[in-house]
Each structure stands twice: as structure tokens, then as C-alpha cells.
Length: 298
Image 1: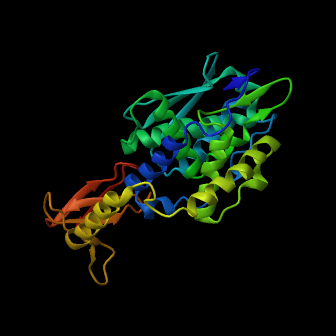
Image 2 (image 1 turned 180 degrees about the vertical axis):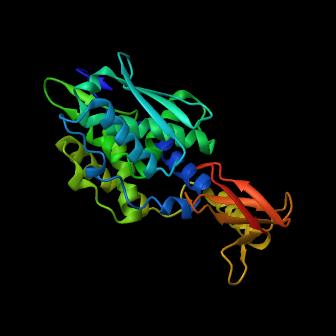
């Protein structure tokens, strides 16, 4: 959180942000990302000054846990004086302790933004998805929070005037706006009516132009002739050896794996994360994300 100090602007972390979006699709699959087409709504995380502080924080935390589809994750929210805005203790679960800065006792409208970031740490921890280094890992967390539908809260927490400034998260306001714009172009969702901060709206609108420009660029422009030929060869090779074959009238997708036996994948009924198991009769599997135990005949 930046307070009474300058807020960094621009796109200094843009390459890491793009790498984080790619990592999300690789780890979750396109089908799982599509299940986050609807963002957290303002009414679901609204926090009135007359609400009980601890009960209200627990209510917002439960709503975010529901949005991220972590049914067995129980968050215990507390407040203490600290340098950072918030902190979460990552354990094996199912209980996780989240500490919020005492500042949020009087700035309750931003509690949802702080919890969205910390609960995303739990989500990525269960996915075993991380980047090396604290800085890049925090950028991954901010990007995932925003792209999966809760990060508009982080951008809306950005406020700046001649006397003071406040920003949550490690991304700049323009980078938050960029990820929101990329999400809006994919899901057709416009978050601009939810902003209460005029500076947040400005950052979002400014970054939409960059997000649209990305979609107008031809692929592999910087790869060179050799790189494009190598890509075409690898793609042809992958299509020949690893093309998935869908069995008729079944929800399963079968894919040959050159490194091991034939495997079958199917979506978890709770969080829709795809689960891959070897074809060997009756299989008992546990979803790594929501911990749901499944049994199926393969």
C-alpha cells in the first residue's frame, strides 16, 4: 500500500504480466479459465461502516472463497499493526490465517481488495503455481486475481490527489487496467460501472487501447525466419503425435502421452479444474485445487 507518497505509473512489469496470463492458461486450461467469466459483484463484497468489523470481513472472505471455488478453505481474518497491507500464512489447510493492516479498521471499503489478493495466494498455493522471486510471484498473484474476476477491487482501491495517494498491490494502476482490459475483451464484461475511483476508471480506459493493440499484432513477428519455421515444424509434430481424440458420447478426453501410458482427463464437478489420470480401470483421484475426491471407471 502506498500512502502519502508517489505512485508508480506506466508498464514496467508488462512482460511478467503477460507471462503470468500465459502461465494461468497453461496450468488451468482454457475451459477452467472460462468458468471465471463473471467477476465478483460489488454487492457481494460491499462493506458498510455500520457493519461489524470482524463479521463483515469474514463474510467478504467467504464470498471470495466461493468465487475462487475453494469450498474447504476456511479463512480466519484478523487485524494488527504492520508495514504491509495484508499477509496470509500458507499452510496445508483447510484453515488459513489472514492478517490485515489496522488501517483497514477505518478504510473498510478496501477490505475486499486486500482479501482478494491474499486468497489468490491460497489459490495459487494449491495449484502449485508460482514464479521465482518475491517480486515476480507477487505480480503473478495480482495478475491472476485480476484476470480471474476479483482484481477490479485492487484497481478501485487506487486513489491519488494533491495531498495523498493510496494503491494496493504490486502492479501499477495502468497494469491493473491492462489485465482488466484483456479480461474484458475475452469475456465481454465491462467493469467500468463498478469503479468508485475516477483515477481507476482513467487507468482502465487508457490501458484498453494497449490491450486492443496486442490483438492486432501478427504472431511471431520478432521470431525471425528460423524461429517461424521451427514453430511450424513443432506444431505439425505435435498435431501428429499428441492430437487429443474424444471418445463419442462420453465427457472424457483421451490423449496419448509419449512419456507414459494413455491418460484420460475430465472436469472436477466442483471447481471445473481438469483432472488427468491413467487409464487402468477404476481410479480414485483427488482434485488438487478444491480437494474433492472422485471415483470413476476409466
